Figure 1 (tube, rainbow, N blue to C red):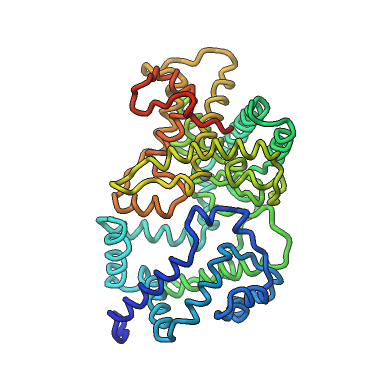
Figure 2: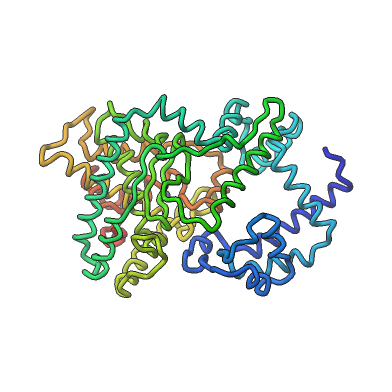
Amino acid sequence: MVGWPDPEKSADDVIALETQIADASWSRAESRNRDRTYNPMTPAQLDADAPGFPWSTWLSTARVGEAGQIVIRQKTAFPKLAKIFADSTVEILQGWAAFHLLDQTAPYLSKRFVESRFEFRNKELAGQIEEQPRWKRATQLVNSSLGEAVGKEYVARHFPPESKATMEELVGLLKAALQKRIERLEWMTPETKAKALEKLSMFGVKIGYPNKWRDYSALETDVGDLLGNVRRANEFRWAYAVGKLGKPVDREEWGTTPQTVNAYYSSTRNEIVFPAGILQAPFFDPSADMAINYGGIGGVIGHELTHGFDDQGRKSDGYGVLTDWWQPADAVRFHSEATRYGAQFDSYSVAPGVNVKGAQTMGENIADLGGLLLALDAYRASLHGKPAPVLGGYTGDQRLFLGWAQVWRSKTRPDALKQQVITDVHSPSRFRVDGPMRNVDAWYDVWGLKPGDKLYLKPEDRAQIW
Ligand SMILES: [Zn+2]
């Protein structure tokens, strides 16, 4: 399509090179390990450690050559990657660069490029049948290029101050539930408990939108130049990131836009963040039954709080510093419960021979289990001893479980599902419901489950983490 000489041969070369890179790289499970991925080095040390690639030149070309220290994540992969580069001919590398340039720009070129990319990436690899309508793709592009400018407008139109107040109250209740849960944990020593409670008390919380908005005035856009706009937006984003070098951490900064339907925990900042976008149904509806809301947004808040204490989050302290604050016996116990829980996920299958990877999804699965337990605790506490109303024949506790399940309703193509279990740290939606629930004792009581039921787990087989 671009007149590249001998494209068939180049395509084979690109696949061979990408396969070598993939073989040298760590698995998703390994690259979650925060002890192994934190490797500070100077550029000169990287040059010495991984010879064959001009790292220092590459860093200065990317305008980060001034960095005194860089963090290498997949450390043992770097010498291999450098060797792959050194062993490749210029012709192969040119073909590789041409492919990636086209692959990344195709969505913004003429129709035949857009369609070819869709056929290859979405249809062939992920089973998607139809391209998304143009307005959706356009909205996504504006969101990723001018996110906070759109966010400011979104918040003004769709995020009333009451939503922020309700959310602050809910976060407080969920945090109190986690505090009580830590205090009464039977398996944890008082020394580790004290540190865990200290960390919890230091959690930062961001709700809705940032206090100060990003300034896009330096970004030029041109109505007649889509590809140019994309390039300038990428350049702007990179300059913004490089501009942080050598400066203190901006604690006000957000890692996502207000209109995003998601939430996150940052382990290095020890903070939980809930954008305005997630404060709508099915996660949260101010006019809906609170049991459903606790199962939805309550479970999400509990999930993010638990991330600070999942298998990787637990490795940093209240300041976000990677440090081991655990008594050895507690760490052993945590690890053994987590391993048992992970083995359950290893057994969940999405296609013949394709199973969920327990180690890869460990942090998210632990957060889902914690989120559900904390939502239940907080909901019951919110009743102040009064019985929950029965609605539509369901008790309050039952509706809470239904609320959690409703949040994860989704449909995924079989090929996309296979991709997901290899690349995503989240379990497929179905197992985000079934997986944690069958480890919650209350779930058995609430629905009257008994041995022999499909998802039944013997009490001694249920994981008890937080
Ligand atoms: Zn999560």
